[in-house]
Image 1 (cartoon, rainbow over the protein chains, first blue to last red):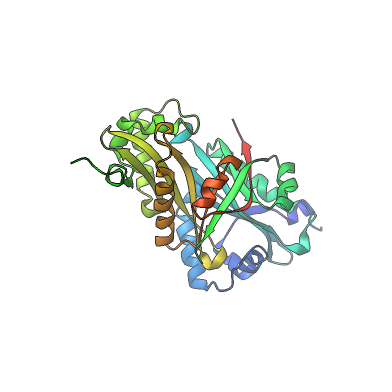
Image 2 (spheres, each protein chain N blue to C red):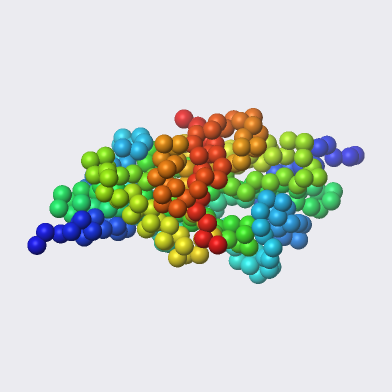
Length: 153
Length: 153
């Protein structure tokens, strides 16, 4: 029996074998990521895994193709503000340009915001381009302020 | 001999005794922070200290008054993007309304961006209101995108 779209595109946490399934190539659709060796990948993977619930990267694998087609991450910032509150920061959300229109981005965002809520965050924040603003509004976000950046390289 | 303004307003890392010097009261000028017990403060302080260079909170103490008059924090996000790059996130910058106009905000930002650069970040980012945009531009930042938020409480 053929898998439903729902079964075909499950969200799960990043696994170390996902480098071989095009995870880095997918990130390249978002920003520069030209050279990550297996060793570098594994070191960073273990470093982030050691943070447990405080840094979660999720992916959607096209299980028929054995290919990672969507990803996103959230890390938990611990503050003194808001009575020692916690904030989820969503980063590096990308859906493979070949599989857009299947609500995979929304699945990723729901997974990440559910995680942030479950660990007790009082809010989740993210930065996006003006053109992606409508997508995030559909996911339940609203614009709060502006993002500023200083580049060193 | 009287201390110069430069000596009087040095930037240093947050210390556990700073709760008794008005650190929480200062944060209240930024957002809600109504009840943090000594125990909660110490627990959060130790939790953040254990992150070492990955989470730094700095303060400026008015040493004559024994009072914390400015603060800001930066935490280091580790990515796969940008060849396993690192990004500094600046949060919770506030200067006591009684000592504005002495460039203390700029000192705080310089301390935090210097830290991010020193640990190998390729950029530092922060979110701010439109009215604070000019201040951050003077500090060397430029607007990149918009900040979105989802509140749980």
